[in-house]
Image (tube, rainbow, N blue to C red; front, side, top):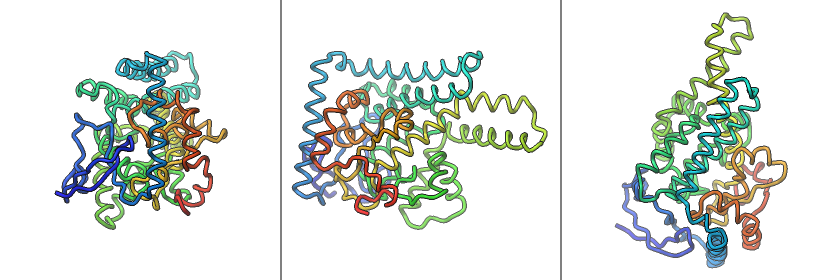
Length: 374
């Protein structure tokens, strides 16, 4: 056993224990079981300067202080489990309701797709909070039921049980090639047709690569195993529906004899279930992969991991990922608040982020393949 100094999400130094060759990913870091998820995630900070440590502590303290003030001024925020359950209900009932309105002829397909995508975005935030055990922390069965519930309305995503592991790894290795979660949605890749298509569908290009090429190194082999395991469940079902919808409609348009009942069924499934998540996923992947830096970030330096990405013209994307580009940097500094609290503190915390070196709307990231330094 070896022990290294680390710093938790609150900016407090604490020991970090590693054992070579163990852990969920075999990296030497023992990731806790899902039933014992940490709110504070130990991260190596050996390479941080004293100035960066101080700036990080200022930001984290400001977020924590504002979080406490909000709970004092708005006592309803203290009922976190109930609020999480309410957000879950809004996501699921809204998604199902918009689909029902389409099936009864009240909403046209294009309105249904966008409305459902917005509700699915709420579901994504609920899943993310559940990954950090921010709701029903001591009730594993409830937490898992909610995780699979929001997966049901977001089938074009990976198995949430595997995402727990990937997301904790994301916090530990954000900005590094080891960050499988962000690398898998094109973070760090140069722009081109492959990256653009992978934003819309990160799964099929990944599966094609897995099938047609051999692992380049141990990290690449790990990435391949993780993608295959995490895709078990609803993901291949959604992929099949999406490409069958595209393929058969194209064949029909080209004059092939395609049974109308097949086209109708695939159209309904695409409009009310899969299609909203293709669009929602594209919006989230576009914002997330460009607000995170990749490739030359100092491990554990939260100042370098993200930027605030909230130009006005990004609003069409932000709507379908719940203002992710503007509030997600707050989460990197302090993971203990659910998504709606980050929304409430956004305007108060942004000046603190800017004053302490966090970048805002660095559009040069598009030409630098998301490198921090270039």
